[in-house]
Image (cartoon, rainbow, N blue to C red):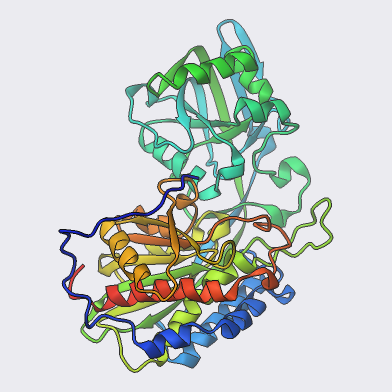
Length: 494
């Protein structure tokens, strides 16, 4: 992750005029700075009772109902007949008899033994590729470049899954499809391949004896959105390059050469067949605080309320992944702000939309469903603020990601006005910036800000418990977000 101090000069920049008249009311600030309230919210959302809030699960639905009831109690309005906005997903599995990866390099031919040598990625779509060239497109962290060699080719993508989110990998696959690729091979770095004992693809039940509940979820009508995509292991790399050392040398050469680059004398066949096993419905939770003047314009404050559910992991006695920081903390920050604004006397000029997203851990599914079928036109969304993991690490550190320099300037200004300002760091265009729900809005051209206090040793582990959060810090992050939210909801133009 790229880290640098956020230093933004304001001299000579005309924003929205003087900030007077857009200050967050003191009574609202006091209502947000309530660590005991924050603890109560987190302790319920991250309780064993909710079983890790997996998408979908009874625990997720209980959390959704809890948030909806809070909105109703505070007088935040629903959009439509309910606070719960449902969207549909499908569980899919692979057909083992219709899976193959075949590589020809010169006169040598090789076929993968699945799942040992190759595994369909969770983001794969059905399809067949016959006798296609292979084009190296670089690292997952880098935007793929348009090139005629990609048309009709299989793209070879390199990355380390330790820093890869399902959403960012899925978006890369979609981008490669738009650039003309017909398939994707995803491979680890040579260093990881040397240590690898199995291919790091999705453990499909049809290939690994996992229960049907482990099936990956995909949006409805998604078959045309991606490509047949495989994670490949060391044997496949040796078939492509001749040896692991040759692959290493190829990567070194590409450091100074432009990508994409055609692999000489290599052709591949790929096949993926999927079968739909189940359709499921899951909710986002949406509440509306209507504006006093520009009701059709709104600022969206979001946080995902799902986590990863329950797993039995070697060496772990606890099987419930409670997700206190990820992301009961961000959901709690949103609830604190929603309560304070709803109960306050002064109302915003623009509308404010509060959205608790489900499906984030499965690849931003809830936020993608929202932007594809928004309850209010996206043309009215002036900015999206996202709270994700805001309760850990140093009390005064805060990481930010954004699209829209005017938002970064306002943030710096509001941070300086805090009684105890944060030391701000910038995420830049790292994988972490792409890995939460604001990314779905940024891809639609909507200005976004991502509030994040960083990873830690309990991330995606059963030890992410409520007692490990810094509730003073959580409420201070929520206050900074609320100050920016209020500023954006009060100003005359964006």
